[in-house]
Image 1 (tube, rainbow, N blue to C red):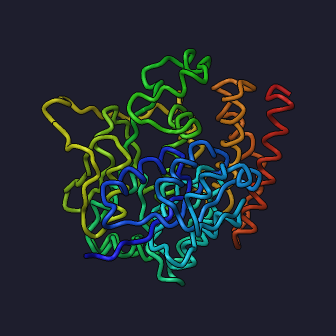
Image 2 (spheres, rainbow, N blue to C red):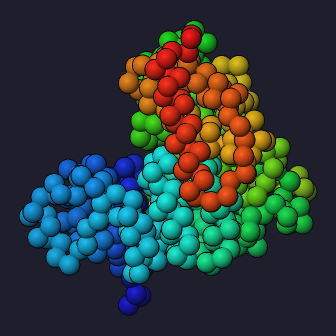
Image 3 (cartoon, one colour):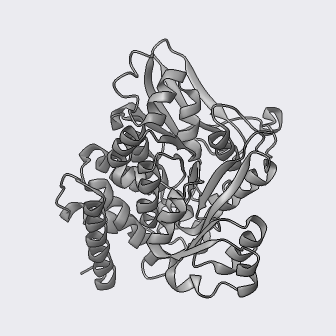
Length: 406
């Protein structure tokens, strides 16, 4: 019998964590859940603790104390820690081989970097580690021998389309930039569904409500990423993520709209070939691929029926209606601390929109104003990243509170 591989699921109660655990359930003979984290969603975390009895549990410090005593009794031998210390302990537990990094926002930075420094196989689903400190993550992987595996659907698609030698460059942290031309890679293309406002007028977009922004036509995601998909900032963040993960210049990366969301991304080669990865829009497919790589294992998702899908459509994004893409590309060009500022300002703006404190069209306005006043600096370490992030968040909150008209 094959020995089980230990898995840590960071953000077990979110959409990524839920999909990851569905895949693990299909392969209980191959994977054992060692660590689970759930932050504030204790009611959703408790049944998972009963089911998997992990060795390490983490949640928000105040939340750990309210886990039901009967649940704790069912997890004899488990260790409980709160806050950032708990997240890092979950990610670096000695019995963990693979870490699924699904903590949304900047909160997942420390635990993801700690997992890389500990030499784990790290399945990166959350964008922030690669957007905010991609070079730090890659340097850590080069030093520790960790394996970096993108499971965001677009980046996982690109990874699958690369030749084996370039896949190894990605997983090691080297990136493909210096060797891509020699391997025949000329460009990569990220596809975007276009979100719920693809066909909406500029006026309708300006007056969009949170409920409308959250109604994504193809993907089932959390509130923040759903709003990012509606503004297309999600694709902008993926552009920065791709630059950092693959070691490419932003000019080598295209973005096109593909409403059917079945062709997840493509790699163009210098002989005129274009190779893409297709599949139903379900995160269990890239998660399964990341867990089993270099093998493949069942994800529980059926293969595409191309006849049923019918015609596939592609178009260029409208940068006037979706200015967030322009802001993200400029941040990718600028580099240094600018992507950190972009991400932090966007998180605060999205939060304010969901709380109906600003209008939908004001989300990119907040980001734009922050970038205009942000003083770019070189990023030295994680503490510096966090310092910049917190400073920009405070500035963005003040801007929202004061009002954009002032």
